Each structure stands twice: as structure tokens, then as C-alpha cells.
Length: 319
Picture (cartoon, helix red, strand yellow):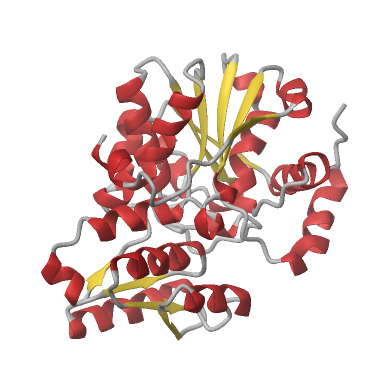
């Protein structure tokens, strides 16, 4: 695929790891695609890099604008710096200082505005109209989806026997790209989307059993805390994704702790959600070789006590 070729040497080919602990609990072989070890600590740099690489020279000269609360911001900043173009990233005022400094460290100009992502997003769109810069949407863009699709290409190269993919869903950019690429390479593969139960807009739409646009979301998986599905991503999800499931907050928290305790791996809530689906809902699927995307590891360490509390009431020790 073109995106896969274009991103060679631009992003890391992250490892595909397995764990006897998780294999035992899931009752099958589980392969973890460690995108928490990607540049910037998350998969987002793939889509941003491919999108920026596809810009015409005229578009590049006008620079890029994005809105983000974290991972997308850093991905855009890295991609823009590599091409030598300017990037302005609008982020909510409450964004942790570490994420702001990381984005600035990659060379982008950060504009802190508003109390929420939606307010930062609105401000970014207004700026884009005035400046003529290219807006880089975090998920609702075909080039961004194509960049994220490279994860599936790598996984099936690393382990062709994978028969099921567990993929987290926020706005849908990751699963849209991954499901499309996986089905082209291996038509009989199952693709399972995983959402936080407290941010289940895609799940509701997929099964038509709840509101398709949420008024609020509250989950420790902040990277997939999206109120509304993407206009471009959702048709891809309908066509290429086999099932969508939800995971509870305690399941996400327990998975984060298990990754930290057993695998010595720090993973954010969104990054742990797909593995939570494979570990706690494996009875719903016929699968022997599961591939799981660990999408990111940019977690604020200060949140560890709250993660522990979220997991503790229903803490289930692994054998």
C-alpha cells in the first residue's frame, strides 16, 4: 500500500509482543502491537505523517492547523517539523503541561484556548478560515485513515496467523484504516472494535440501541472519549468491522494495571481498551490468534492513584 511505503523510515515499525499471562487469561494466543512505543508515544503520528506528506507544495507553504488534547498534537508537530512547515495546535487550557511542552518541543506553536476540546476545535477552524492553512483533522480524513492502516499491514507481516484484530474506537480513524487494510490482505479476518462503555457513540450507532451523539462522556480512556462518530469513518466501520463491543471502566483500569505490573509497560486508558476487550469478553468470539492494538502510552503519572481506585472494587487477579 502507498501509505505503508511512504512511511518507511518515517515512523517506527513497532514490536508485536506476546505474554503468557495474557494468553492464559484470554484462552488464546494474544499479540500486542506496541504503538505505545511509537514516536510521540502513540499511533497518531502515522496518520499525521502521511497526511502532511500528501500535501501539495502550495498547501505546505501555508502551514497546518490542528486541534488536540494530546496525541494528535504531537503527531502533527513531528510531521510538520519533518517537512519543514509551520504548525499551530489549538489545545484546551486544562491540557497537562507535559503534553503542551512535548508538542512545543517538536516545533509546533501551541495556542491554549477554551475549557474543552470542542472549544479548541472551534477556535482552530476559525483560524484556519482566516489563515488558509490546512486543517489536519484527528480522524475524519481519508489520508489520516490510510496512515493508520499501516498498523494492520505491519501486524500481518509480523504474524500472518492472526485471525482476529481488537482495535480501540474513538472517532474511528484508527479502526477505519486498520479494518480496510486487514480485509484487503486477509478477507476472513475478524475485526472487533472496542469502545469505552461511557463513550459508546459508535457502539450505539452500530447496533442502533442508543444515542448516536452523546451529550457528555466520562472515561479514564480519554483518548477515545468522543461524543460523535466521524462522518467519513463510520461508513468504513459499517462495511469492514465485524463487531463492536464496550468495556467497563474497571476493566480498562485493571488492564492498565496488569500491563504495568506484569509487563512493566505504561499504557494510557485508550491504549488498554482493546486488550480489555480481548481479556474480559473473549467468550463472545471464535478466535485462536488475536492481534491487539495497544494504541498509546501517554498517561499522566499523577493519575495512577485514580486508576488504582477504578480497578480496585472489582480487582481480578490474573492466574
